[in-house]
Amino acid sequence: MNTTEERLSQNRASLGKEFWLKTFSFLSPLFLLFLWEALAALKLVDVRLFSSPSRIFKTLIPLVLSGELIYHTLISTMRIALGFLAGAIPGVALGLSMGLFPSVRALLMPLVAVTFPIPKLAIMPLILIVFGLGESSKIFTIAIGVFYLVLINTMAGVLNIDPIYIDVAKSFKASRIQFYTTVAFPGALPMIFAGLKLGMGTALLLIVAAELSAAKAGVGWMIWRAYDMFDIERMFCSLIVLAFLGFVFSYLLDFLEKIVIPWKKR
Amino acid sequence: MNGAEKIRVENLTKFFINGKTAVSALENVNLTVNDGEFLCVVGPSGCGKTTMLRILAGLEKPTSGRVHINAKAAGVPSTAVVFQGDSIFPWMRVVENVEYGLKLRGVPLKERRAVAMEHLKKMGLERFAYLYPYQLSGGMKQRVNVARAFACDPEILLMDEPFGALDEQNRLLLQQELLRIWEENCKTTVFITHSIDEALLLGDKILVMTAQPGKVKALLDVKIPRPRDIILIKSSPVFIELYKEIWDLLKEEVLKARNIK
Ligand SMILES: Nc1ncnc2c1ncn2[C@@H]1O[C@H](COP(=O)(O)OP(=O)(O)OP(=O)(O)O)[C@@H](O)[C@H]1O
Ligand SMILES: [Mg+2]
Image (cartoon, rainbow over all chains, first blue to last red; front, side, top):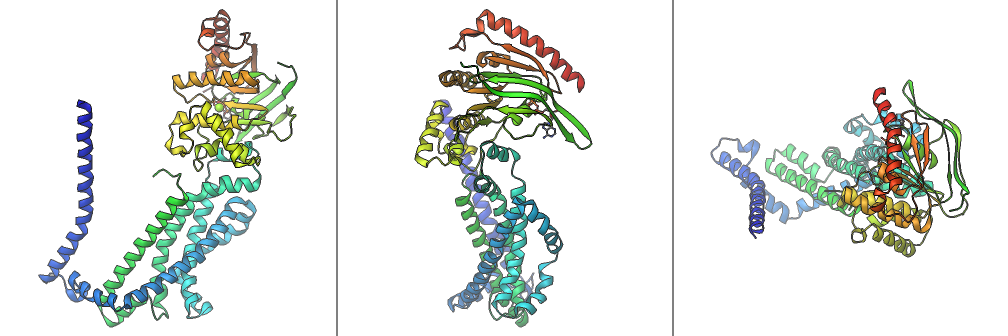
């Protein structure tokens, strides 16, 4: 009896602790916003450069209501999604084959090793020359950034599968195909997802750069446009959208990971 | 028990090359295991027991010498291995792990699931059939490991310290279970263990190996009648005598192994 009582109260204590931790992580950004607003009101920060939460909010509402912000968001989302898929799918396919076949690895690894370190931003002018000013150049820029990260992580995932699992498959006389489907692919999945998540981060970085050059719409374009017009509030609104996009995409990937890798300890 | 040879090992030698030095794991091992025989292998740590088992399973090639396995039935795998340590696939549910061998052989889902469930039941794990390995304790995982080898119904079972990581009570239960299952169908078995008790309890023969490089030190017959009772045989005079004999043989080798290092 006594112990049950104790356990219950311990439980309550830990629940209380969790509640406070949640409250803290909710309050800290609010506090920062409040501080920002207060400093702006007291003219301790220059609102022409740093704006203030209330000013940003005032700009944000009409931007959302007019549909302008949503339009640009959708265009960028489309580019990110297409670029991401265009990079991730070949990245996984090639990463798997490089992990599985030493001959493919020997053939392609030097190429990958030499081209991977080139900053993707450095080849943007080249991409523009080859793909022109249309959609494809932006999608390709994102795709190439995602591609390398997914490729390298997928390959590492296959190569790092614990040899004991390979022995088990061998001892049960698995055929090559059976080995790929029952050991190599599922074993590499956690690393594939690590690559996808890294790739998503890069995609958000590259969309802004890609929309700098020769775009007429998109969140990145909005940022550069706001820069030209010195419209700090619009710039902050676009940044909010980017943060939001990043959050949504990583949430989606986490969700997908939970479905695809239910066996991972979390 | 019929006397046909099932496994024959001739002059088996195995070196590993570690950088510039060659490690000799097995040296000139000769051995035969008859059909339906339960062979236990004991020897100091690092003497090449796992290496020998891996060669028998076809996972490792001998440096010289031959291993001959007399497989008869087509369609049934000749060997199945219970690996030392954690080897069940984390990405498959418990029951999928157990039916893995059957799945690779193309046994339809319904059939193989029934077989797998039966083996899980024997291991006391049916309640956990649809969990993932990360949700099991270490001992439970090891039982899945054993069930996986049994479920594919091989001609020869190769077990590498299958109960090594279990707690005393579970080990006793599983030894009892293994005895029972084995005495039903007398499958040729090679069983590596560090426990003299376990070797005497389960084996028809006990192979004592020397310290590294592993050689055959002695091959003893365990003349304890079957069916055996796990508790009763420990007080039988044959058991006590054999225990002492094996311990004397092993003690020499274990001391030698320590002096090498
Ligand atoms: N893949 C390998 N490469 C190099 N050396 C190896 C390899 N596998 C085993 N060895 C060496 O071969 C010797 C025998 O190893 P083995 O694993 O067969 O020992 P064991 O008798 O199973 O020991 P334990 O009882 O501790 O499991 C050891 O000295 C080990 O270092
Ligand atoms: Mg071993």
